[in-house]
Each structure stands twice: as structure tokens, then as C-alpha cells.
Length: 307
Image 1 (cartoon, rainbow, N blue to C red):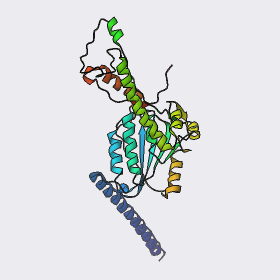
Image 2 (image 1 turned 90 degrees about the vertical axis):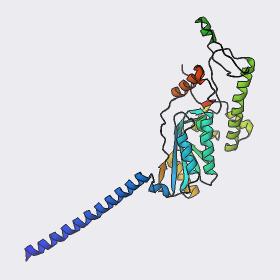
Image 3 (image 1 turned 45 degrees about the horizontal axis):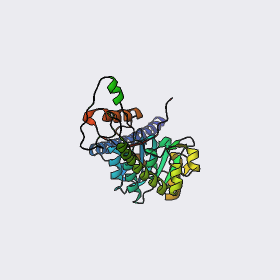
Image 4 (image 1 turned 45 degrees about the vertical axis):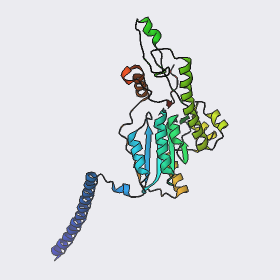
């Protein structure tokens, strides 16, 4: 009798264990099937739920089609409840910064809050992007600001002459292809080029003043090209608070009612490995190689002088 009772108990335990593992197996198979469907169809089930879109802007800012296309899609996506922009860049091309700024503002116009976090560096075109946000955070030792525009060229005609090389350029007008590394810049070309830089700077300056609620005089004093630490930027109203992503998410929860457990989905980038050397090398090639002699655009980038 004792043996039979023990056997019954053992069999019941075995059945319970088998039932448990059957449930586990069913769950695992179900998750695998859903994952396979998501991969095959390109559909992420989480993306169909309310979520925070996390956008990382790093490296040299250019017209990144991956980011622009992702933001364009997000502007029409009702499941995006907020955008968290994480910035770690010294800047880049002015058009690259402007393009991302405009896409973020388009999302914000749909009453979707945008909050920016500056990590190590968020300067020049990087700060331009931060201006799209409702609130800007930075760490106390982050580098930001450097509001301005830069267009650099080199003139090597003297060196070519010493080497016995003569360069000939045929132009349709006196300002075509100016400035050029193959001839000294004329007074007329200097004025025209400076006017181009000044016009873009005025646009950037006006944007800065409007987004930060500053008078043009105050904005102009702050936008002389200098960089600021996060502490300095906070005192001068370039940013709103000291903090990082945790503080930004807390702000979204407190001011916009976005739950702390809201899923965060990151906008993929194909390649964020470009460096300042890559940018300068690319611009130099476009200046020196005749088959690619064209103006690629002024840059807004912070690069401290090297001793």
C-alpha cells in the first residue's frame, strides 16, 4: 500500500513537471514564430505600440538619409509618443544640421514632445539640432555652443609657381569657381564669399534667438563662435537643465504624462563612424580635384586649434 501511494505521488509530480515544460515549450515556439514573422515582414510588434523614439546624432553631421527618412516616417506615426534626441557631435555641414532640425520640428508640430540630451559635445550644427527640442539637457562638463558658420579654402598658386606649374582656369564670370586654390582670391570674390557666410550665420543666429527666447543683441553676443561648458550654457540659457537621458525621461513623465515604462525604440543609423578628418579630407578633395570642383556647403563645426 505504501509503495502504491508513493508511486501515485511520484506520477503526479512527473505530470506537473511535464505540464510545466509543455507550457514553456509552447511559449518559446510562439515567440519564435512571432519573431520569424516580424523578421520576414519587417514588422516590429513593439513599434505598433506607443513608444519613445530615440535618435542618436553622433560623428560629423551630414545629410544623413537614414535619419531623415526615419524622422519623416515618425512624423506620420501616431505610435510615437515622444522623441529623445541624444547628441554627441562637434557639428558638420549647415545643411545637414538644418535638415535634421526641420524634421524634428515637423514631428513637434504634431504635439509630440522632443527632448534633447547633449553628451560629450553638442556644438555648432549639433547645437542647431538641439534647438529643435522643447527642452535641452547637458552634463556640467559637456561642450556646447560654438554658434557660427565656417567656410575654409586654401590658395597654393605661389607653391605651384615655385614648382614650375602653371594653372589655367576658364570662367564664365569673375565669381565662378571662387574661391579657388589655384589663384589668389579677388576682392570681389572675398566680398561675395563673406556675404554667403554672413547670410547663413544670420539664419542660424535668428533661429537661436527665437528658439531660446533671446533678443537679437543678446543672441549675437553669445553667438560669436565660442564654446561653452554645460554649466556655462545653463547660466546663459543655451540649455534648460543639467542632466542626461534619465532626467529627460523623467521630464517627459512629469510634464507630458508619458509612463516611465514606455518602450524606447532606437532609430537605426547605417554608419556613424565618420570623423572630422573624413569631413576635411572630403572637402579638400572636392576643392583640389578638378573633376569634383564644386561648393559642397559651409560647415558649422567646433574643432579646437591644435598646437
